[in-house]
Length: 139
Image (cartoon, rainbow, N blue to C red; front, side, top):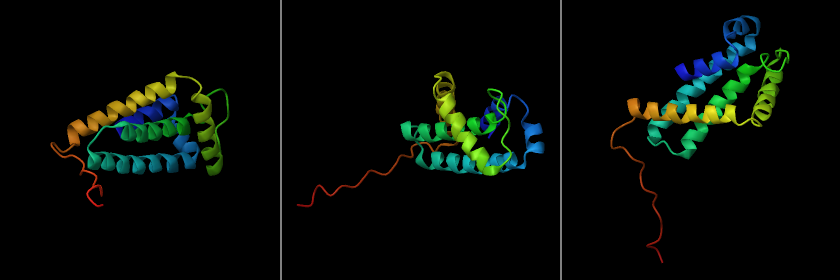
C-alpha cells in the first residue's frame, strides 16, 4: 500500500488530497486500488514466486493506478468529472504514456522490486508450487 500511495502521489503531482475532495469518483478509484492491492499481494504470497506473470500483474496494477491518478495533471487536460469518463481517460493515459519508454520501465521496476519485497518479508520459506500432473503414463 505504501508503493501505491507513492505512485498516486507522483501521478497527481502531490495534489491527491485536493482531488479526493473535489472529485468523489477519485475516492472510489483509490478504494478500489487498495482492495485490488490486497488481493494482488495475497495471491503473490500464495504463489510464492516472482516470475514474469506475477511481475506483469503488478505492473498492470501500478500502471493503471498511475494512469488513473494522472487524470487532470498531464498535458493541460482537464480532470474528468464522471465515473465512465475517468475509466476512458485512464485508458487514454495508458496509451499515451506507453509511447515513452521511461514511465512503463520505471513502473515495471517498481512492480518487480515490490514483488521481491513482499516475498522476502511475507513469503513462506520452502513453499513451492505443486508439480503439474500429466497423463504421460497412460497409453
